[in-house]
Length: 451
Image (cartoon, rainbow, N blue to C red; front, top):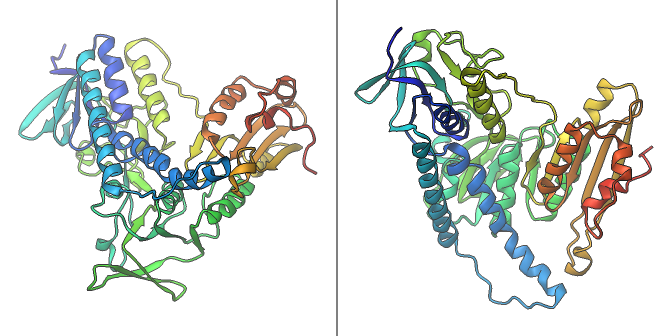
């Protein structure tokens, strides 16, 4: 029997890689985890965690204003970007230490450096070569910025969290989660913000009514929405500001231009080609139902396989792989009914089928809908509105999808995701007594379908 330095060598200490490494080590497996940049991965360092902290921050100006309707006078309030940025850095550093401790306490060897696969059982980090029975690639995704004149002057989501100065004028390019969320963050913190998207409406793939409703609400928050256009060139002026020429002929100036135009699998420079690991055209590693690549000893999970680019999915894949390899379990991950949220303002929470998807798949669909001004805003003076929507199979009464645009939508939809996983029918929702007064109770009080 061949002797290896490790049973499992994990490349990438992000959510999926760390979870797989830790769980394997708990099973008695000899594990090494290599990371060259972000301990904890994108999510902890330049993704979900710092983004959510900035989303919280961006709500405060609005909250101070709304508090006046409740008798509070908030005067002389100022925002200090370096305080937010540096406090965020401190929190991320704390999390990095926790991730290190988690891996080390589980028995993983943490190796700092860029790992490259040089054989079916060999990985090189720096000038040292390690051997492993199995290699797991969990290197995640990387921001994609298209080629255009002036590309070198724009930033991606990797750089946006640590800007030296807070910009007064910002252009955000893109139409997905990151673009919509950061447009809300910048606007909420006081920047003049324009969102530019080449399509006719952002958040492609979401329920159409949710997309339209969100556009109305986001515009209320002061974000300028520029659809059906794109940036042709970016020129840096002598003042240091950036001048963007758009496809519709307009010229806009900004202090920063953030490109949030998607993410691609972070698979370059790993040596995959040299050992024959099959990849898609976009660099995604091709795996079978057991997360095994075309090279039997090499596996891959998370955003680098480009199935569902969500942190909890990478975690689930990591646990499923370890269960399969080391605990005689199934490698199966259920990708149906994955709840998700967009932390724009107001938030979007969604689980299950959109109305469009349901009508394509089912003979008859009932749609239940409620739109209202939340109780809080009867005194706050805000004209923000909330949308709730439920999609039901008319034949079986099973709830196929639930969608919400409103405060804390993600918190509410997480619980509803459990109900849909359990196969809840509309009758189950109807028989559930609501919590009053809450926005969430609307989901158990909607009785008449939309005609």
